[in-house]
Image (cartoon, rainbow, N blue to C red):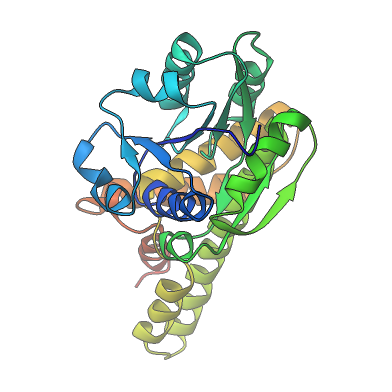
Length: 277
């Protein structure tokens, strides 16, 4: 199926678009073409310029493609997409979710009988890493389906780690990794405040935070940390740092004008406030 697969990509946001461009370039080198669809059609211009075919509807993409990459923001978007793909795709279609979503949702969708097999392949990296094909992908699900999609995932990743046949495992790893990032940001915020309280210029530490951990909104951080807390509760796992980070992110969103779209490194301001700065 790898040689004859028709590949589609849904969700051309800040991460999805550069991934789609890389996959289109990889397919073009093989004499093939990527089919794309996005709710906002204008976002497809740059990948179409690379030779991709823009489908007018999601249903038309589903009818033509037997491997479909999906980069959705949240659980509800993935549920809606899965329903459409299931209703309009050919038997044997593989839906590859690259999204950061609830592992329990992935389990439910992966266990559904029907024409579509869901595998999970969230990625680590910022949009600039996606553009340079330097992402790290974690792939899990039905073995044959993962074998079919892995070569295409490698077109946009420097490394792909296989995590077995349980699709939710990839999302557990993705959430665990994002939890580490969030916790480190909060830890660095505390370190910045400690340095500032001892006479170190605030701008120097802010520059470090900005360079190390930019590119993720407060809403995105809250979503992922919320999923971490849910997973920890379901697993009987103690993650007190998740509660601290969640509190700081929520307060940042509440206290900062336009905070929902701010970079999540801005939670340093809450730590400063708590320290009297």
